[in-house]
Length: 196
Image 1 (cartoon, rainbow, N blue to C red):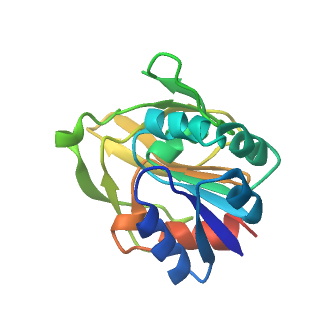
Image 2 (cartoon, rainbow, N blue to C red):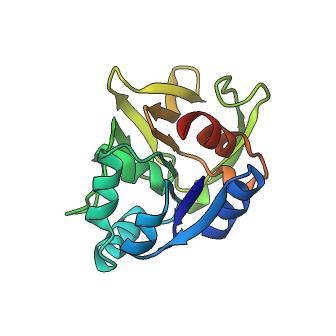
Image 3 (cartoon, one colour):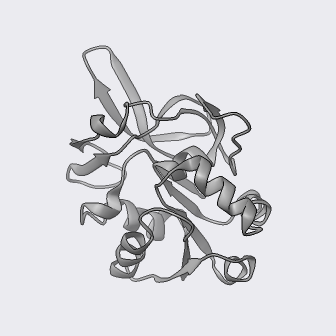
């Protein structure tokens, strides 16, 4: 399987390394022609408004949206989660997403860069072992439609629990960055389960 990593901003190289360790062939995607070549796509973390703006600049925004709507397996981490959401809370004026997952996501839900943190998550669908998760200016999911499967939650305090990994059909999103921890659980799940 040839998987593309949207290479406009973010942890592009780290995602390529993780995908290749899982047995996939991976290339960078910066042009509509490169997008046509791939069977699946990873949208890395970064700054969601910048990625969307650059996708427009490189004539990729509409082609990506159409491929997602037509069923291309797609995984988004952090900013990628925001870009796969049908609705964004705290969006910048005019901010758009590729959409696809029936969820409402809150940008920068965990706070600013200084509030970034690491933790272990229990996500049985993704791994039998806890997953090390790195949250950097991360979103969380405020609300999901009934067709969205919640794969992992983050417990904040005693009362609040927020989805931080979700799947809807051939779309997968995490609020955290698995590509920088060396844990391949999320990438393996994407290749073996979402893309099959």
